[in-house]
Length: 109
Image 1: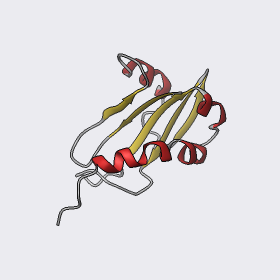
Image 2: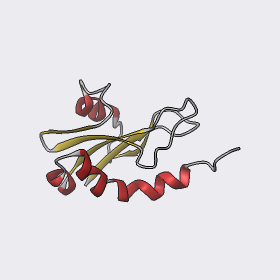
Image 3: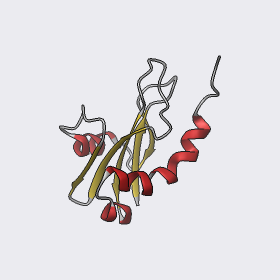
Image 4: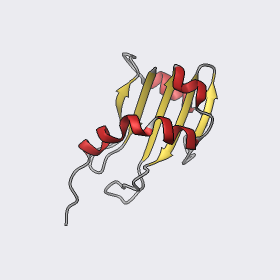
């Protein structure tokens, strides 16, 4: 499986947390999400890849109060069975949820 994962954090802007094994994942990401920039949730198959976007399942927001989207470009076996955002949440989110939670800062008062 190849997994590109791009998202934001509370205090950091959009960045790639996983590069899918590409030296530069940006062109692959841009191709997968072309025309979908403003869609809050997406599941689109393009050839052997799936572009998947969903809002943070925990409802986490950035400093501006926007719910954080998680964007993935998936290829390999998981891409063959992901047909919807719900599928992506079930299959992909468990693989990255702990990683994201570790990077999430403690709540401040």
